[in-house]
Image (cartoon, rainbow, N blue to C red; front, side):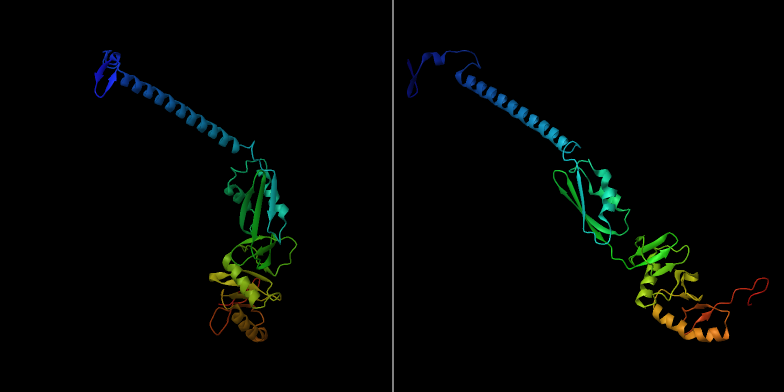
Length: 269
């Protein structure tokens, strides 16, 4: 033993073994080795977990897991839920987690009476569709059958319903301006007094009465225009019986259209 500082050390500890072969260097090399092994193990574990998670997520989103088996339609009062279920039936078997609301919306577009809907996914296999129906203004008759309208430009078939009004040939039941005229006719209490409603010349709307009168009206104050027709009708019937077309859009007066030309003759003017 030989003295070295305040305590004694073996002489072998001072033997020269090369520039990197001292005891302190050996301990440092071992620490690096252990650190490298730990880093490699951690990296392998993270990579394995990531691959496992990726495989698990792919399985969860596949049609083999969480396949849609049950469709429930709720919230309907005036329409048959079976109609909506039939439209969505082709989604059966699809993965419920991966099912997008746009796919449901694309099938719901077929129903004009659907104002909105909400999808709720109940794992593992149930989809609940809550539907909100539009408010029906009335039913109008068309060449294709009765059609319900809501007054805002929406229309949908209404089989078996009794029309409040009949639309003139070629009239579009989803025309929002035409629907506003229908709404005013209802508000004015003219149900059953107007045989048909349609577009007229010059931006007017044309009403036809059950007894053959044709009335061109503006899409506002229909009640006032109807009163003008009622007041003028007796005079016209007495003094101009051949003229049964009135333009009621003029302030304080009515304008009579010329009678149709007789076959083989000349009209007015």
